[in-house]
Image (cartoon, rainbow, N blue to C red; front, side, top):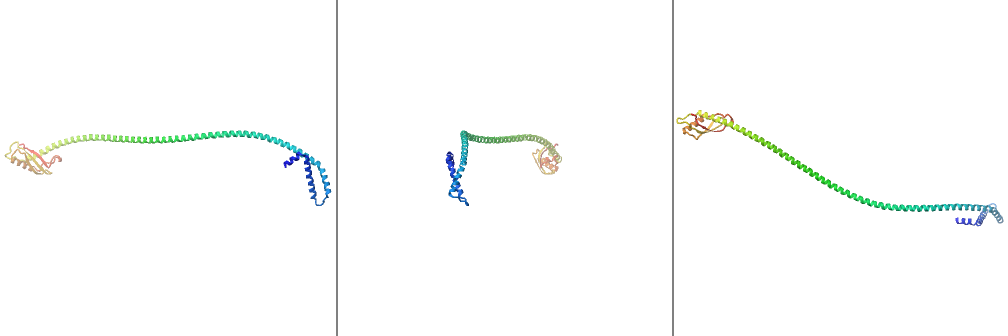
Length: 296
């Protein structure tokens, strides 16, 4: 349609003929559609010629108007086309600049990607190094903690050992002190005991001497000197008694006199029964040994 319109605008005469043809065809169709008044063929031809003659000027004027409008439109379209071309050139330049910018951006992006990749590689290597360093430090800290714990346990064990040694030493020293004190006390007690025992022995010895003297005196009081007895006679007398002083047996030995003297001594002992009580019950003995030696 555009091609046809362009051809008509380039050839006005052809355009006029085309318009006339269309007008004639329209008139024929109009006439053929009339129902009440049907003209004859000659009349139809005359009317058509008149119509064509009448409208030719209008058609030419309209064609001229259309031509001017078309020219104006062409100018506008040409100006528009120029503007579009200018705009297209500008867009092309802009697109080229944008392409350059995008190429630069792509290049920068690629460089950034490479840099990021390098940084990522470096970061991974650094993370790996840091992880290895952390693992090493952790292992070192665990080793140091284990050593510290072992040293602490060793220190505590040593402190406990030293405390035990000190406690044992203290106990030993305390025991030694107590033993020394006990030994000193025992020595004191032993000395005191010996002193008391000596004093007691002395006392008992003194009392025993007195006790034996009392027995001797009582026996001598009950002794009847035989006619044959002379001065300086003596004998050893062993007396067996029971508690209370009752004499149950008498043995006379080592006599310096005769048999009569010996019998007189035995008789005197039996007569002296019960013997004198000792001044201390500890001195009592079932067997008493003394020397009978009369004074006169």
